[in-house]
Length: 396
Ligand SMILES: Cc1cc2nc3c(=O)[nH]c(=O)nc-3n(C[C@H](O)[C@H](O)[C@H](O)COP(=O)(O)OP(=O)(O)OC[C@H]3O[C@@H](n4cnc5c(N)ncnc54)[C@H](O)[C@@H]3O)c2cc1C
Image 1: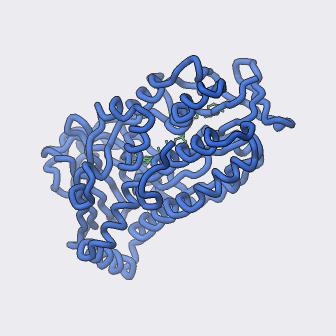
Image 2 (image 1 turned 180 degrees about the vertical axis):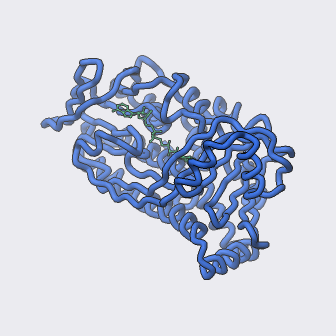
């Protein structure tokens, strides 16, 4: 009997497998990690062309899991963040040195994070069922029976649903979601600027939607550009020269002239929250539990804190795997962090996404206020660094 199954080996599922593996080895548990695509496959939804801004808090968790050194090989530190609005003078600047940390965060390509995570998994503890997909889940007396596309079935005391924001299994289990579309699509691409980025990240708010340019290795920048759906479709279809020209106009010349753009991809955006995250024998995790707007760079960092807390709850309890009281304790322990992080990224997005003049005035003042008021700025920086709720991720 497979005692513990993780459905989805994306960023979140693979991180949970890693967070549990030492404890699982000691306890004689086997972890079944089920994933249709291995990292390095041409199409892997979690490890596509995207990059992720990892918060300083995430670095601390990865250090504890023993893979930060490997990830750091291709992690570009964010030394400063420049937040501005097109057409307004107000701007705020956050600096790692003001916050007493070596970096405000780190930008890493998802494909690299995936590779580091999968390489760190011990095959004697984590059984990789890849390529395979869970087609159906049936609730039994002692957990769930999973039916896989390879024809096999697994009876699991605990099943963790980490199959992403469009989780078909979540729907199959009748777990409802609260969905608030932003009416926007994120266009992502890597771009090469004319000047050195020097570890500076830019968050820029324009009347057409916010954009972020994050420093990447080899003096590239990861662009996340949010526009309405039709406009995003138009931008993705343009030839390279036209695209770079339009990007230049929206961003300005702080990084010199843009020289090159890589493959462009679109992600329609919505805030999606599952109404239940735990049931007896079941946890919903990662994007399947909450998908956030990417502009504040919080989604994965929040999910990694969930992973850390779930691993601590499971390994810290003598109760059988899947015990509902343990799972409820985990969920209620994470409730505040989730509410604050979802609220923070939703408010940042809505505040800066509204083109109304009253909001625009408030935004200008807000940015100035942030720059003039060190405590407000410090608070903002701590939220962005993933250190807002817990000063230090839990120790095991
Ligand atoms: C444009 C963009 C930029 C972002 N930038 C940031 C950022 O800078 N910082 C940040 O913290 N977050 C960021 N995020 C959020 C981050 O990408 C997500 O939080 C993260 O990808 C969630 O990972 P996941 O493993 O939950 O889901 P996914 O990445 O969707 O992975 C789900 C996995 O489950 C597998 N799967 C699906 N169905 C099944 C099945 N039936 N059986 C088995 N396996 C299955 C899939 O193949 C996939 O590998 C960004 C998101 C977007 C869209």
